[in-house]
Image 1 (tube, rainbow, N blue to C red):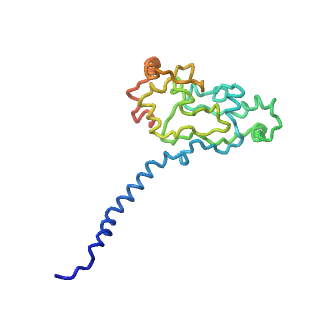
Image 2: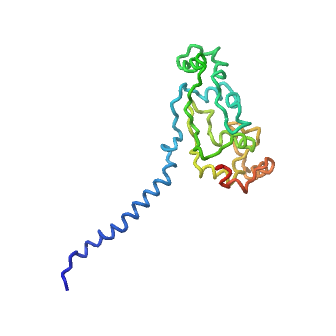
Image 3: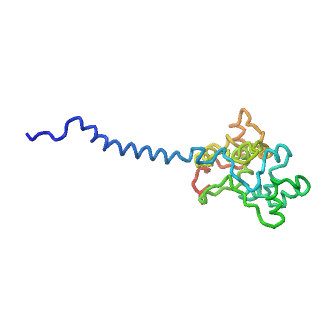
Length: 219
C-alpha cells in the first residue's frame, strides 16, 4: 500500500471547506433579510435635518392646531399634502416675526420659492399608498405616524416595512377606530377592540378577505 499522504486529523479542514460556505451564505442571507428591521437602517426614531425645525409637539399639543389645517388634502387624496409657506405665514406674519430660526420660512415667502422639506415617510416607488382610503376606513393617524403630537422634531415611529403593513391588512379589526377619532392622537383601543373593530369593518366596508392581495399596494 502506498503511504498515506494526509494524516487523519486533517479531515477537519475538508469538513470546513464544505460546511463553511454553507454557514457563510446562511449568515449573509439572514443579515440581508433582517437588515431593514434595524432601526438605524429604517431610520425609526431618528429626526432628519429640515430647513426649519418644525415642532408638531408645539403646534398640535401646545397650540391645538388640527392636522388638517396643514395637511389639507389628507381626507380626499392619496397624498396628505405639505402646507405652502403661506400657511405658515398665516401666523408667523404676526408672531415670532424676527425669530432667526424662522428666517428660511420668511425667505421662502419673500422669494416665492418652496421650502425643500426632507421627507420622513418615504415609501418606495413600487408601493402605492392612499391616505384618504385609510382615514375614511377608520385608520388613525397615530397608527402609522405614532404620537407625532409629542414630537419636537419629526421622525418615523414605524418601519413601514411590508411585514408591518401586513400586520394590519391581515387583521384590520385590531386597528380600526371610529371615524370621528381618526385625528385624535390620544384615543385608546377599547377592551373589546376585536369585536368593535369587526363591527366598524362591516360598517365602513373594509374587505378583510382581500387586503393581502398584491394588487392592493402594488399596482
